[in-house]
Amino acid sequence: MQDYELYYWGLPFRGNFIQLFLEEVRADYRKLDASELYPGRNLNIQYPGMAPPYLYDCRAQVWFAQMSAILMHLAKACHFLPDEPEQHTLALKVVLDCHDILMEITNYNGTVMWDQDSWTEFRTHRLADWMAIFEKTGRAHRLKPDAGYLLGSSLTAADIATTALFGTLVHSFPELAADLEHNAPRVASLCRRVEDRPSIRLFLDNQRRELGKAYCGGQIEQSLRDVIG
Image (cartoon, rainbow, N blue to C red):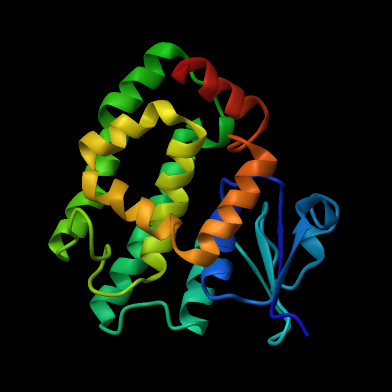
């Protein structure tokens, strides 16, 4: 029996938060296209979610939705959270920050498409501040330019989430790599080191060979490319 089934589109975006984790722990999982459930059957699952990703825990026979909840479920099951209660809460905070950034960078899931002025304002101020928040978190836990992790001495779900967020972003939009290096150089290095972990590296090489620089797809991605490019 497989451990998990993950339902998401053929894109990195939110799906990579889950897939990088599953690859790191070498879980036995199957990736299925989100259209298997969404939109026709998503309300029929045990605990419905509004949109992908969805995870089915085959052994527990339980469905999970919402990227942050799925990642925290996996982190608890695989012991990828810090031991201390306050650090456990901080790991959740990092994952939720990642979710907020995804919402913001897509202009609230494409509620409004980006124009050049609003994007420049966001990139210069809000996105730069987000990067600095992650950098300060890492520095508070002795993250070095070439060693360490976001919340201390061991790899946790917070590092996987940070890499899925910023590693994917700068791969899909290389123009933003300099922003990350300027505002969060240690986080930029952390993302490269996590991406170079053997199982993650193999997965990303295969994914990027197949998908190129795809990000979130559709009009939202095109809007981003118009203002960034």
